[in-house]
Image: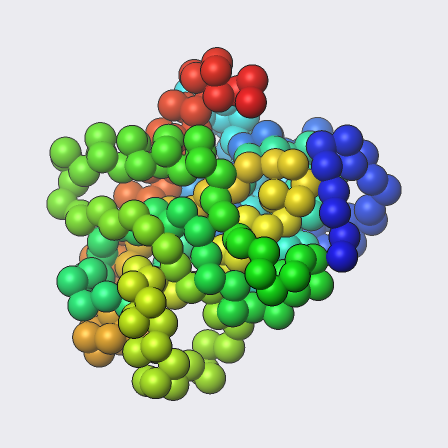
Length: 264
């Protein structure tokens, strides 16, 4: 089992996948899955410029409220997400917020809602290379709290429902049977997605911080989803992406302004 700490950030790792170098990124990095969502984040940043684009990893850096912020797409699943966090950490990134899509597992959660997860059930294979099966994949408390506060504030002016709790992180999109989904729902998990376990686990092992805010793309237990309609046919999901980005950026500003948190 590999373990890391804060002093390991200078490890000599070749940046073979993301192509980012020291000085390219800010300490705060937003992590969407889809490379096409990186420009969606960039429009909120001042002086945003593309740093690198290799494989599924598209990276931009700019500033938000005077804070240097980057965004990098991770692609689909824990293997590529772990590579993104490893290589970003290796060049100085310290705080990671996944901003993506997720499928709901409870019948009261609707497309377009916002979910902030506190920890993930590790149904992936990648994190087993890092930690034993009993090891939790937990989000950073302070960064998550900043997301919740920012979401509550934004909720006053936007029409989304907010849910906070546990999620499942799965590997095999097409192998999820109705029985599998119903079993996850029985555990009172809010949602299922494919990257959080790796992001939470790798960040923790590196002595860094990670959290997640996602827009709901559909409800698997209520059979309320259509992954073929795309962005133009799912306005609620597109707005949820925008809301998640706004929440993440507001959380960064809130977190950065809290000197007590920064010292922990």
